[in-house]
Structures are given as C-alpha cells and as structure tokens.
Length: 87
Image: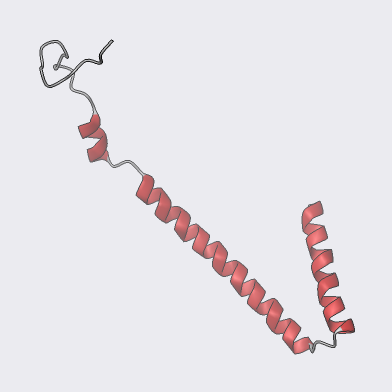
C-alpha cells in the first residue's frame, strides 16, 4: 500500500511541476494521462492473452503422455535395441 501511495504522490508531483514551472497546457496533460491509462490496460490485456497462450502451448497433450510411457513387457536384457549404460 505504501508503494501505491508513493507512486500517486510522485506522479502527481511530476504533473504539478510540468504544469506550474514549464507552462505545459492542461490539455496535453489530460491526453498524456488518458494515453497512459490506455497503454497500461492494453498491456494487462496482452499479458492475460499471452499467459493463456503460453499455458496452452506448454500443456502436455494426452497423446504425448500415452506414447512416452515405457512399456512394462519389454526388458532391457532380452531386447537388443535397448542398451544398458556402460559401467
């Protein structure tokens, strides 16, 4: 909560200094604030869609799980295609 409050205070001080000392018109400040809010919300939405997309891409499919399971009836001593590690 302290970080949020300090963010608002420093942001307000930045805008106040811009208006008072540098004679920036208030219209420009309002446009700046609106575009900042639009940018933040668009980044939040992009993050949500990106998170869902990454979760779908990283999810292990059922077919891969089924094919990656070792077969129980194959033993390494009887099957020549399975090589034991050298000791």
